[in-house]
Length: 139
Image (cartoon, rainbow, N blue to C red):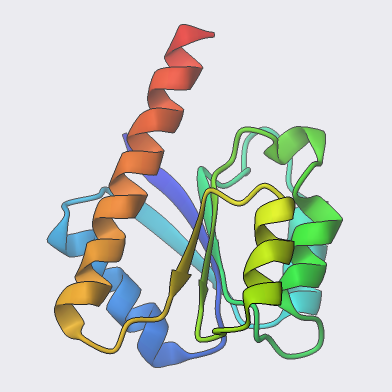
């Protein structure tokens, strides 16, 4: 199965590291990268059953509108109810984490400094996608 991943991130290095983490865990995927919150809100507003992402990775510190705004807008939309969302951020503010968790995210991950720690994100994504696939087949 080829997974559709939406990555909402404005840092090209972090996107590259995420690609390496996915490759490290042999996750078959196609990745769409959106670099600002405003564009992400527009994209998600135009999603339908055929192009809905299987998983969303979102940074909180985005241009135009922040990641929390994107989460507030779409976290509980009918189309995205079963879609795991991971916050991948440099923010160490406990308030950011609490607000994101109240919006039902699947994981809150501080951007790691060590390469091996970044690769571990691939394992988190693999587990969430496997869990989503099992849930869909049970329905």
